[in-house]
Every structure is written in structure tokens, then in C-alpha cells.
Image (cartoon, rainbow, N blue to C red; front, top):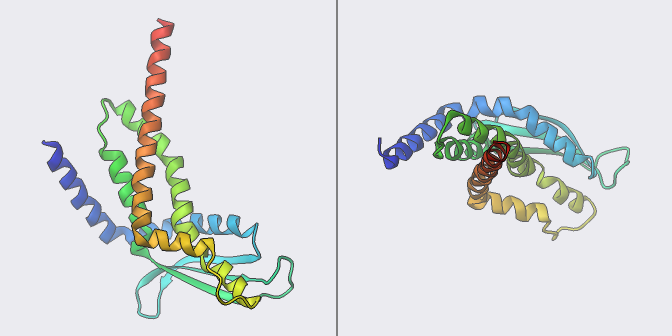
Length: 199
């Protein structure tokens, strides 16, 4: 099969998976997003209560994070309670692009393909953390600033969220997939050189 047709079929398959599996994927990934949000909260005056898949007021499935913000770390009572929602369709964009590129990239053997996947897993986890994980908490610093009386602050979290919303998440997914492929190829070349030197 010609390479162009393979990529076209892969794109159709990816769109189909994205349309049908967005909610199940979000449910599986929600605990990881919660872990990322908890990790980020360790260094900020926030507390994350939960990250779950739920229905929004219009009955659509969303990834919902609830938490509390404090004016300062150690305050006994929160300044505000936060609810952040992300459409499940947005949550599956990154894995669809990342894994489609990674798995469709030419590999000479099954071993090389498995090496792509092995390198891809930690890269993907980091990618999910800096995209969907960060988008879930982007409003928290703004709420802290508002509670302190700063109504005009534009935080770096705001800028990052806007970048992700303006196709930044897709660009990052593509770049991360190419990074994983590059690292896998380097490991493959090093392994081949070691075998030649040993012979």
C-alpha cells in the first residue's frame, strides 16, 4: 500500500477513535490528571479535591476538576472554591495525534517499533501533564490574585492555556512524537554500534 494511503487511513481511524472513545479515555486518564494537579498544587496555595468525568449543565461529558484556592499557603479557610471543565474531546486530541504519528512512523522491524513505543510512553506522560494537566489548574492562580485584590493580573498560566487553546496542544503532540522517534533512533544506532564493536 502506498504511504500516502496509509497515512490517509490512519487519519480516518484516528478521527473515528477520537469521536467514539473520548469519554472512556478521559475516564481512564482522570486519575493521572488528578495526580498532576495534586503535584502542581504542592507548590501553590491550592488544594485539589477531585478530577472526574461528569456531565456539564448541557448534558455533555466533561473532564471536571474541583478544588480550593487560598490567599496564602497554610490559611485555615479557602478564599474560593473552583470548578474547571474541559471537554472530553479536547482531552483526547493529544493522545490521538501523538500515538498516530508515533505508530505510523516507518520502522524496519517489530523490535524498532516496540522501541518507539517504549520511549514514547514516558514522553507521552510528560506531554499529558503539560497540556491537559496544566489546563485543569490554569484558573487557580488567577483566583488567588483576585482574592488578593489584583483584578488585572495575566498569569503565565493564562498565557500557557491560551497557547494550548490556539492549536498549541496539537503542535506539542507532534513535536513530542518526533522527539520520541528521534530518541528511539539514537538508541537504535547506539545499540548497533555496540554490537559492531563487540564483534
